Picture 1 (cartoon, rainbow, N blue to C red):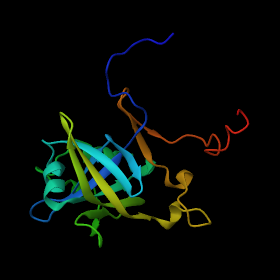
Picture 2: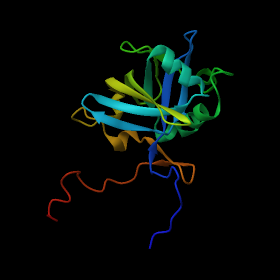
Picture 3: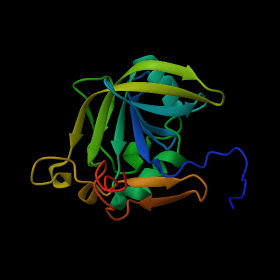
Length: 189
């Protein structure tokens, strides 16, 4: 028997993504966001949901763009800091020892030290209550070579992304490979 826990945000896991933006003065900023995920395959899109009170919210609205920078397990402490401090009060990228490069495709920064980035142009905004959901079309995905397999494809075991558990409020690594998707269940039918 399952026990009811009520209406809560307990979908697990959620990504731990550093959303990169430029503020109104062109200063790069990033905030760690977990209310996020893939939302469309054609065109390829992601969504991130931010509270209007965040510094990044206004930057996305103004610049109509953002990047999704994926930290590795080794960068979890720095990533967490990006979710604690506000770019309104401190240059948190500099304080965290992170550098940025301007995206050539969208008006947003790329965090150089994180192994993966999705460059997104804003295509849809939805007010959902406490959060605004921003849908960004992915114009390009860039991945550090050390996170690619021998065929040049993203290798999750090498990327070692961070995920967030909303119920426990802990960060986790991605576990063992369980099987090939759209394959391991074929013998049931």
